[in-house]
Image (cartoon, rainbow, N blue to C red; front, side, top):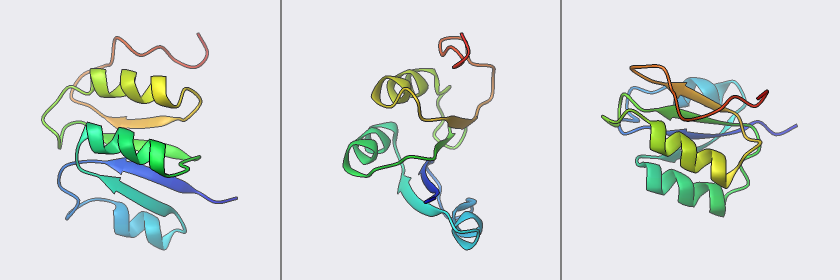
Length: 92
């Protein structure tokens, strides 16, 4: 099974991208939330979205909500400075 990831983070220079690529993941990168949403539309991301909200200087709430609307079944791994309040878990 192809393990494709969408990584949304501002500074890709020091990211996990190269490590994940070595582990067999196919990586699609975006530096903004808007670019990430566009990438979801253009590429068939089926594994996971990694959202580094801290690198983007945002709390990530709106980005998570938008990502979940665009791809409800796609897991999001987020790096946040606070707990999310607006995005419900898949089990609820």
